[in-house]
Image (cartoon, rainbow over all chains, first blue to last red; front, top):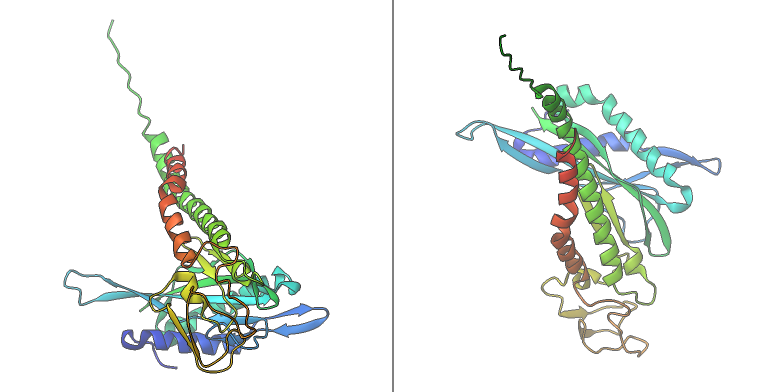
Length: 151
Length: 161
């Protein structure tokens, strides 16, 4: 694993989170069957199947920490969107957020030592769950924002 | 007899109040955000064209986090509704060069102008809606309401004891 650098921070963060999410795809039970999320980088427009978790690109805030500006703090914010069929209930979104949050927390020391990422404050921030229609499907969606600071 | 003037300080009460203030302000900000994004959702749904399926309206929803809110218009089709939603520059002419279910091809269609569908029916661009750029208009209404919706919440927080 490579420590993430400021020069490639967006790519590095995306690659790291993608690997982590793919290794820990959330699952939930519906009608006695186990349903597993898939991961995509944007909402699937053609023939989408649900549930999906969308990993968006990182948003970076660079803050100079001395007067000359030659040292900076990099704050990283990544929004993760969860989409599941409304039929499966809000539990599907809740489970997705719970499981990914737990996976992220479990990897906090790896973020620090291997990637050079410290947990931000607040580290994890959930949105409300909304219902909307996409094509002929009614979906529930919720989002979570995860924050880091580059060491 | 010696006169005694006793003065008491309310510093303790003030400091207790000040201690509660940051959280009270955060809560006030969250309530303000919640109100304004809800208003935006209602406004956008009211302005969006109903059309034949109502998909444009049904695809509008809000995301509310602790420190930010998003109003989302979700358009589940290849048809470039985003031009209509925000009236982005370049929306005027749509060039259809291959098969799609909306118009015959090849054909150029001026968005909002008189046009007929592939089944030769007149296009009602804004059935039940309030015209192009409805999302931008919803945003402008939200922007205009910020002071009215946030100020009472902030004042309430500043009165925290």
